[in-house]
Image (cartoon, rainbow, N blue to C red; front, side, top):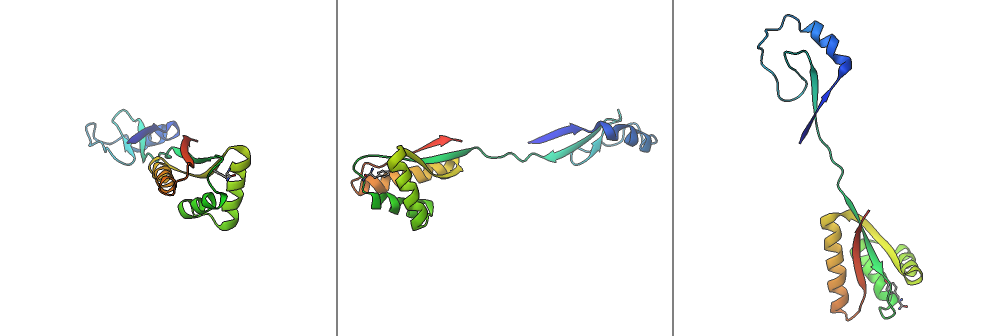
Length: 131
Ligand code: TYC
């Protein structure tokens, strides 16, 4: 998607500079362009920031602390210290952020954690939430 932006400060200058242009000259569709009205437009590639999603771990009474630390290390690339800090935060507060990702990456992390936890017989819950 391209956005066309009118640059008022350029209009007068460009009109003067192009007063001898043929009336039906080609109109460029890309890059800087100018119609025969003298309106100057500038196109720029639209860079859109992706929506981001927090991946959350939920506390429960059964999943061993060491397992949660392992999950944080394995799927969220945390070191021992950060993983322990996040696990304890979830243990005390009920919920905590493991990381922030684009939609598909967040969804993959949630699935990986849920599958891994179930395979090991733990009820650990992982979910995602738009930032
Ligand atoms: N509350 C669990 C326990 O006491 C530990 C735990 C921490 C579980 C974080 C889940 O997301 C969690 N064994």
